[in-house]
Image (tube, rainbow, N blue to C red; front, side):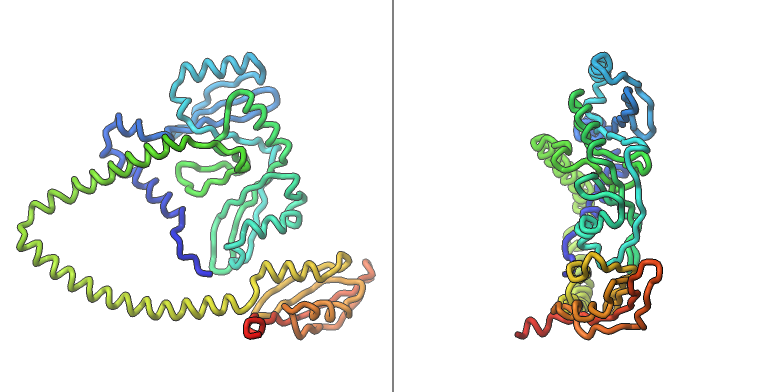
Length: 365
């Protein structure tokens, strides 16, 4: 299905630009009132010490405290002496030995179900299962046919232990990232967070509503201050004349746009029909996984032009044709080459191609 909703990243980029480029129009006192994202307090725990750094355009080393009652008292005193720390968002940064980063290249077709695919294949991409680690996905780039991403993982017991230590100090993290791939919060709108949702910082809803209302009012006032001088400058006759000319141009543009939208609608309907005609890749992978027994190994799986190409080893490769054709998703399974035997493993090497059945037959029935 085509995604017709606005991308939240576009909205984030707009407000980030607005904050940087137009904030000079807002009085300093009001700007400080609205800005609850003054800076970041970066916290790292190493051995029996806790390191605090302050990030506001540049990183400033604050203090190194002992991880005991004395250090807790020093931290509380530091907050009392520096009220700006109360508004700083807290970033917990895991050490290099507390996580790993893995680069992945996946087909563009799985982008809509990226989280589900990673969940399903996590133990194949990494030596861990979902029960062992917390992980986050960071997209690096998206091409026409593939997605480049980073998979960041940390053992659950390490992150849970760090979280409980900070909780005893009254520290609730905003996000948790990894020293091997730190978030660039000034320039990157798609920061990742290793912290599970149930442990994330909950922002005060009343404060958020109040802040959003003030921003809306300011935007409205700015719009009025820009529009009203222009409105009163022109006399009503000239304004009317200009509006008529503008309307004629817009009417022509609308007509042209409607024609383009009609053509685009036809193409969209065709694309949707083609997409629904065949099962999604994740369903095909799941079916193959269920059909093949644990003693059969796949080294290559290629899906192209409604055909699935399987390469691997099995104790009895000849039986795989019948196994694959037992599923309503597949038909016309056949060997692409002669079955050979691996002398080392004793298994039979095979290359099989099988057609992917469309859903048109099922719907008409």
